[in-house]
Every structure is written in C-alpha cells, then in structure tokens.
Length: 189
Length: 133
Image (cartoon, rainbow over all chains, first blue to last red):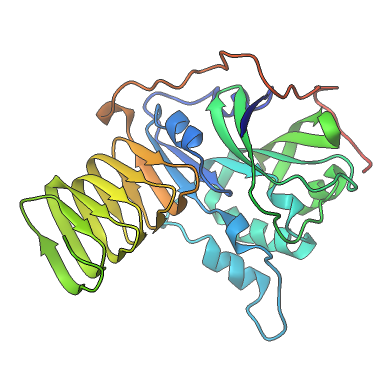
C-alpha cells in the first residue's frame, strides 16, 4: 500500500536548478517509479545504489574493511559529482564505523553546496518501521512498507549524526510524527 | 526466440523482435525492434533496441530508443539510457538512469502534491536543532 507524506524540506532540493543543468542524483535506496518519473522532467543522471540490499554492512574478521566495502559499492564514473543525495532511513541501518566509511567514499563525489535529504529518528527507541520512499512531487513523497524486516536496525540521534556526517552541515531539521526526523543537509566547502 | 536451453556467446543482431528465455553473453543490437528478456532469461550483455523489456536477469547496459521497462520480476545491474524508463514495483535495479526530457513526452508528475496526504507528518517545528535523543 502506498501513502503520501508531505515534505516541507524536499522542495529546497529543486529550487536552484537551471534549465540547462544536467542534474546528478544519488539514490542510496531502491528507486521507485515515482522517483524516476519525477526526475525525468530534468536532464538528469540518477544513480541508484540500493545499499539496503547489502545490509548488514559490517566488517567481518578476515573480510574486507568497511572502507574497501564502500569503495566497492560507490563506484561511479570519473568526475561524477552529486548535486542531490537521498538518504532516506539509511543511517538507521549503518553503525558508526560504517557511516564514517560511507562518508569517506562519498566525499570525492560531493561539491560545496551539494544537497541531501533524508530521514532519521529523534529518539533512538523509535521502533523499526521499514519503508521505501519515492518522490511523488517536489513537496511530497510516496511511502510504501517493505515486505520484510531489514537487518541491522540501530538508529542514531541527530547529535550523533552531526558528528558522523562530517561532509555535511545540517541545514534544516523537522520533527515528524513518531519521533522521526526529516533533514536537509548541505555539503561543506 | 532464444529458448531456455540455448546459450549464446557473441553478438546478436537482427531485423525482428527477440524474446530471450535462455542465456546470452556478449552484445545484443536490434536497433529498431523490441528485445524482451523473459523470466528465465539470463543476459550478460549490453542491449540496444527500440524497446527493452526485462522480466529476467541482466548484467549490462540497456539503451532503449523509445523505452526501457523493468518488470516486477526483473533484475538489472547496469546503466540505462532511454527517454522513458519504467520500474515496476518489485523490480531490482542497481546502476544509473540517464534521462533527458527533451527526448520524452511531457511529464505528468506534478510539481506539488495535488491530493490530500494520507499521512500528515504532524510537523511540530521547523529549523530544529535537536540535541538529545
């Protein structure tokens, strides 16, 4: 079942896009049709990582380091720089070290002012509620429940995320129902 | 049709539509026709056609002159270039999608939400800087 969730922060992602600009977007989750349709109005390259299909992402004894794992997962053509990153619920499923490794792999693909939109939690005790998101309009998201439960749920508070997401500054944050958090990030210079 | 027991390695070209239920490794070029990778099809190849339908598994780039459709049973790892791309709910896709609105029909997606929301966010505050969890 699909529901619609209005968003007061999402529109900021699209406010300063020139008609001539080729938009480069990173979707860290699975791409829904709504997102593809939405970005089809722009000249756009949408990169779909679906990191959720790789969970749990952790360092096993004798296995590759987290940094190597994320370097392998975040392989983009040379010169790829993202204008927009979509981090919907991602950091609820990555531990501290995994987030730091993810930031290290992403950093070369950001420019000062790159924007990111995402969801996290305000309270670490928020129960797991696995969802998929798509952009149904510039100010609204389509939300669908996931069929199964994702592994590795261990959400972080905003104060912890502020330190972990060191490539970004928190631009705006909105507290949502159920102690969930919507955030808009801007990449640091 | 390339049947379920058929395996092909090399370049597949032709002047008709193609259904693939078997295995193909290499390159598939049917510029003005339709290629369908059926549910049992496993393709490790770049596919170029007017319409590309994926119901099976593909590892490779998809170039659709008109459109690319990945159905709910489809799994694709690769890059898509097409004026119209459809990902059915349940489709598994990893890669990039290149889109250019100049090549497609006008978008029907609204710039703003036009219907009432089912799940209002109960926005409590904006520009919050929440220090505790």
